[in-house]
Image 1: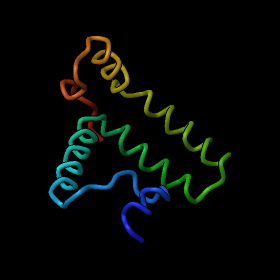
Image 2 (image 1 turned 90 degrees about the horizontal axis):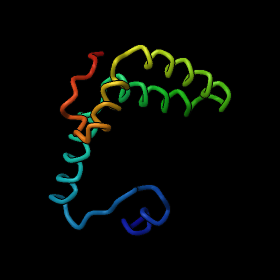
Image 3 (image 1 turned 60 degrees about the vertical axis):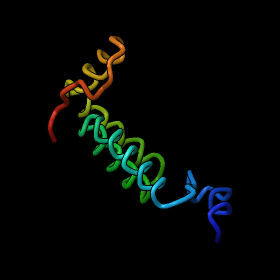
Image 4 (image 1 turned 30 degrees about the vertical axis):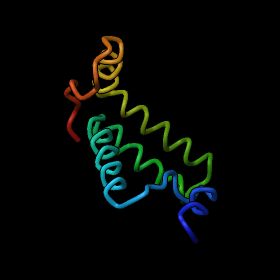
Length: 97
């Protein structure tokens, strides 16, 4: 399968002209993800993996439990505050895992 076919099929979300452009985009995405709350990033990953192997109802229950625990951190407040002040979330200090 060629890159354009993989893109059209939804197997990939982007196609790059060369390795350097691909690596630059990958590092930019990694930097963006790393600027987010570690609790939210890890929670999203865990929920996606769980949902892959369970029913919709089970996954929604599991996600609701995770969301309740995520609300216990100050990360949401810090993210909203940064957005309201039109600051980058990189300026916020998020909770540690």
